[in-house]
Amino acid sequence: MQSLTKRRLSAEELDALMRGATGAGCRLEAELTDGWFNTAYRVRFEDGRAAVVKLAPSVGTPVLRYERGIMATEAAVYRRLASLSDGGVPTPELLYAGDDFLAVSVLDGTPWDKAADRLPAAAESALRRELGAITARLHTLVSEDGRFGYPAPESGLSAPDWRTAFTAMVDALLEDADHWRSALGVTPAEIRALVAAGADALDEVTRPCLVHFDLWPGNIFVGVADEDGADGSDVRITGLIDHERAFWGDPAAELISLELGGDVGPDSALVAGYREAGGRLDFTPALRHRLALYGLYLGLLLVVECGPRGYEGDHATWCRGFLAERVTALRALG
Image (cartoon, rainbow, N blue to C red):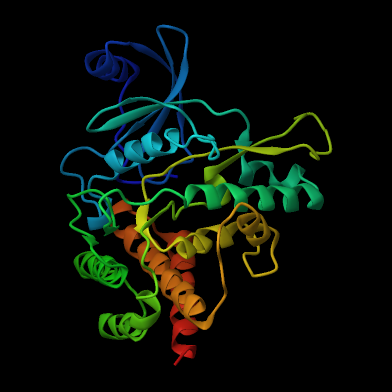
């Protein structure tokens, strides 16, 4: 995906960056163009290791407030995931990290969205169940300082309780929307009122869990046994990528991006896997209210990010439709 936030380097510049920061030069093999924010390159380091190098936007590039410092957030998430004793969340290995880049190992497999048309229904169901279990293990990680919101201090979007943090997260997007003159189709005053109406539901969240918040199929790699035509019955999840949007908050918020890949209802395969792995999801009225709020938040994020990234056309139209649906859902709650 083309984005105005992407910073591109020549092969020589990338080699110089890696050599200066890590002492290990690299050979550029390809630009990976599926990303929506950072630039990503597949490289080969001098010692033969294949890696993916992600570059943060250039200094001074306009970004949303929540995006400040998110390269460091992603590196921190990789380190926390590596600390899990059972290795229960498959993800690339963090090889190097700097202020404006990180390098990770290359995953086996294919992004789920590119493999989906080769997977039979039974394999899809098994994968969703496995994804639920992996997500439950992800949510065992909690904030070390007990705070909710985005970890990067540059954003200033953290607080000692979830209601305050989430309200600040929404307010930051509304401020960004004003700056970029985003067409929200709803007034900031109504959005703030909808969030305030969910205060009691938000106050039920007392444990700041790690929430990826970008688990759409393109960020989930799967390994297919035989790319030339196997039935896909033994396909497995090989890793989760792109952790930069992560925050500390309500684990139920994860369902919003997971829904982009399939059913996340109480009787879904994903929720079954989540519960089997020890996760708790009780679809009470309060939880459903929070899910509606998190859908609103993602809708706002998708619309507002079109400004600094330069997204137009069909994608921008889809984002506005997504937000409108979430606003309607919240209004229906009264």
